[in-house]
Image 1 (cartoon, rainbow, N blue to C red):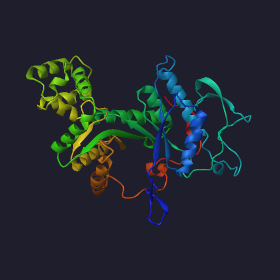
Image 2: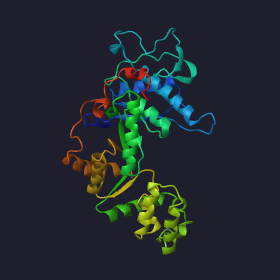
Image 3: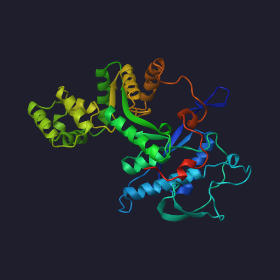
Image 4: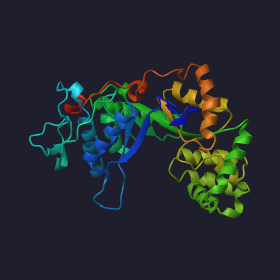
Length: 375
């Protein structure tokens, strides 16, 4: 974040980039989470965000419902504890955002909508922090399913999503906006960030070659077997440099109708039908968690423009193929194209993460969330 100058002084490399850190709401206590993220927000002058992750575990007690209730309770604590003295009308006095009756804390058995959390517990009063420029850390969320959707719609300003197609992305974004509306919020306050994996090269062929080179460090034997299980064929590493035979392809197409309708499955068969070797099929990213866009900088800009302008997302979560040079290539080659198309900003809206996301000012709990969610 900083570089040394010839004079021996140091200056910030950037004063605008936000830092969003993932925290497990399953294995983190509310008090610690509140202190850590509030401190980070103050240190960065209002550029911190918290990605609330409902980590799963082997315990049968950690069901989706229990993890969601705990996430809702824990997300509420840093939010409530972020009210600063400057915005509480009590300058210079220790404040926390809690209505505590004792120095140690209060019984906390309801979420902000007045719904029982299923577990009452005594929470200590968070230590006083000076105010940050954005009020409190911005809440992000990345969980899926109905519980994750409810959590995101009620609290999050940014949501990391993993749609594979534009149609899937539109459906996920609409469901998210509906959840925000049910919670009494403006749907535009919740931004869905669609993930994708870029590989930039002078041509599509060169991009695939780059991905094949990067794949040499992973277990391709395991990946080709996974590909086989997805399309319903017994594939092994011995066929990595060969395409599917005519018989295999016909068998896979027949089996497609008996398997779950997955966008990745359709994409894998489309690529295989073009006659690529299995190594190249994998290089197309057909089994990766996010869609892979391998091609020129213009190809990537086209992908992002189409998804954004068709309402498939509000922004993107980019998983570069290699941190050695992938991020630089994206910044130096793709961003200028997006700026020329007036799709990406030339400057920042302000110094805080909240301003740059277009998220409304917030100190302590959003008062709208004290009301029961609308059906």
